[in-house]
Image (tube, rainbow, N blue to C red):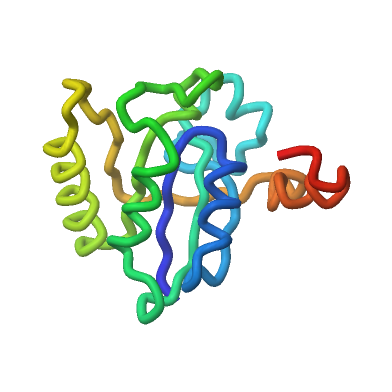
Amino acid sequence: MVKATFAAGCFWSPEETFSQITGVTATQVGYIGGTLDNPTYEAVCSGTTGHAEAVEIEFDPERITYDELLDVFWSIHDPTTKDRQGPDVGSQYRSAIFVHDADQRTAAESSMKARQNERTDGRTIVTQIADAPTFWPAEDYHQRFLEKRRSKFGGLFG
């Protein structure tokens, strides 16, 4: 299995999207790219730790490629808004790709360049591409959050 790590705003929806893709074998939400070890949700939301909310994905590259995961990443959020996705504002909601090796970096940079070249609205993609530092899993109640809520409330939430 191979890892991929993406930050696309609040981590609940990206986790749900990626978890339903054939070839993705595991997902977990958490925090990455900050300065504090073992951050909590409250600390990250304070905007002082530098972490992004992200989803770490394990995938089988024989069933889905990293490039295909990048296509999903670009489609599920607005990569032209700095430190914001929808109503969520703050650096923890930034758009970022955390790469695990040189091949992922090359693919991410190429993909971002292609997406930018396809844009006709004049907006610039502000997605950060960085080497993946330590990924800190979020608290248990954040894992599979939307799935749990839908189950609890009979499909009325999320």
